[in-house]
Image (cartoon, rainbow, N blue to C red):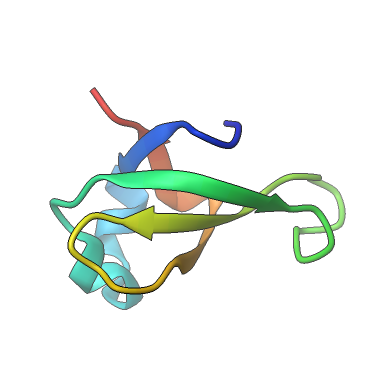
Length: 68
């Protein structure tokens, strides 16, 4: 994924209770943070602006999939 991609929660992301408010929403990747990522997988932490939410949210790549 890269900045500007339209995303939604993956099946794994929907199972997590911390992502409850993002279920059914579309999001836009606004920033990829290499410093906060998992050390072995560069670019795995992303800042996503979700539709209907005021502020951006920190998401892990595994929680996301490309929107259709």
